[in-house]
Length: 130
Image 1 (tube, rainbow, N blue to C red):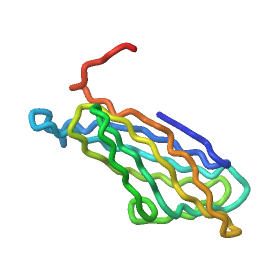
Image 2: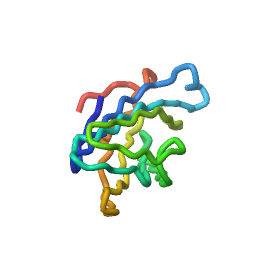
Image 3: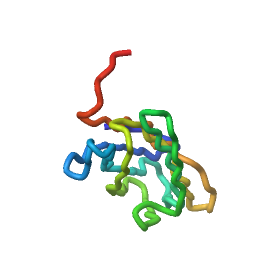
Image 4: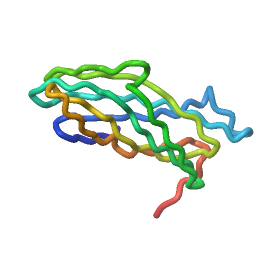
């Protein structure tokens, strides 16, 4: 589990390799990632936009930007959380994801919160010690 807190909003991510949807012989590897967004602050916030940076094992990066997450722009009161699951394919057996969510507070002020960097590891990637 990977976690980051920005302005009292905690984002936790758990990546899961999907062996049943991957085809290593065709350089097709798929992961799901479970995200929990928790408002630990005292005001209500709403998730407006997402921005992901997905980098494969060869350093190729793709960016994904858009409104909300999984078709929603959840509003979170104090102590509330929102959970969702999404996924990403890569042509390499490992990679890295990170990003940010644009949030809006009760006064209409927008701010970015960090999505922690997390690794996408498959059993088909040789382990290396650095």
